[in-house]
Image 1 (cartoon, rainbow, N blue to C red):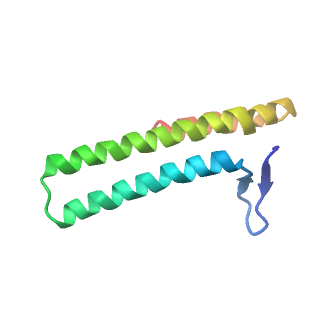
Image 2 (image 1 turned 180 degrees about the vertical axis):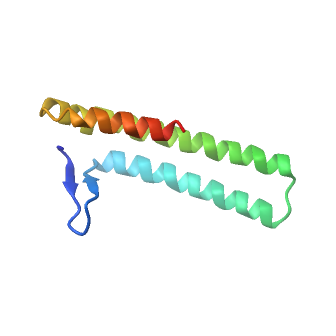
Length: 103
């Protein structure tokens, strides 16, 4: 796959990301991490359940948004490049990934 490399220490695939894509994904994850820490603090101080649930819903929405961005990037780069190179197996991999995501 173009942009993907096999990790030397294991069989995991890896992807080279542009600095912009990397920064966007890391920033999103950092915000989500902060939100989760905030929820933990709410539980520790005994916050009211509906308040915690609302914040949990916000984290779920942020994770879904992260997944949508990552999936779109994956389709636009890895999947497209593989299909152009004749590796149609990437479609089966994408379908399997989508099935796992929709459980």
